[in-house]
Image 1: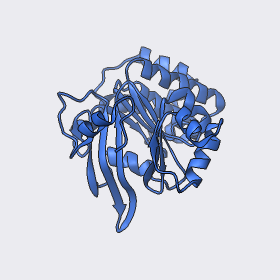
Image 2: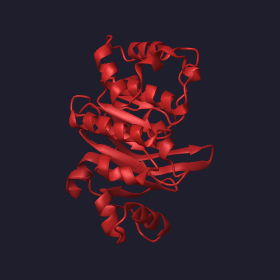
Image 3: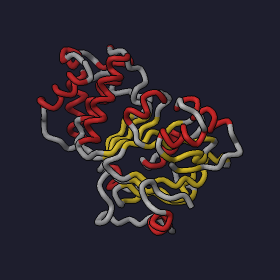
Image 4: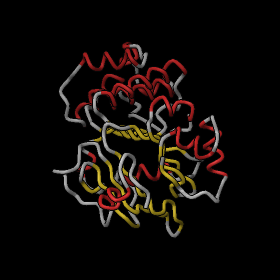
Length: 273
């Protein structure tokens, strides 16, 4: 069995043996643990035997080709897909329970907020869903950080560009106060200035003790934001470790070249760095 990042093999076997326990008293808020997690669409296997742990404060990037199972893995953790085998917990709660989702904020890749609402009305709705009191100072801070003009909040969401709507969703997530952020392609549709601003905002979330799990095709940004990457290929874990460890394992100085070599080399087993 692979050792958990930062632990010994014995510790990993102890923590991952059997079904992950649902024990909120011993699991940090924002932590994730999966053991043998699998799902399928009909008879078609999508994910097979995924073992994974995330302990805050930590940022993990999920990378892989289209169809590798990245979004399906996130949907499993959110209880949006049925688990065919294995189990997973978030903060000690089974992922099928509402208690597991109470510790996280999620932004999908195809973010489509209600088109008839103004930006301000959407943020008000998000606060109600997160059960948060109004915090205009925090929202203004996030608007500024993501370079979204305050006047945008008075426009209908349906009239916003993809990038502006994406920023609006990110403001809601970053103001959620949740210890775990789960983001599916959060940099999609953002211009370079907004990408830099989001990188800084997510780094600040981690510095404050939060954890982040996100999917991305922007490999150049991974070393700046994530200390680990989970490389999925054909529904299985091909690599779980640091970006530097992947480069060293594949003999490449560039992360994108290392990722490509790892995906193409079918003889190499999964490994952790």
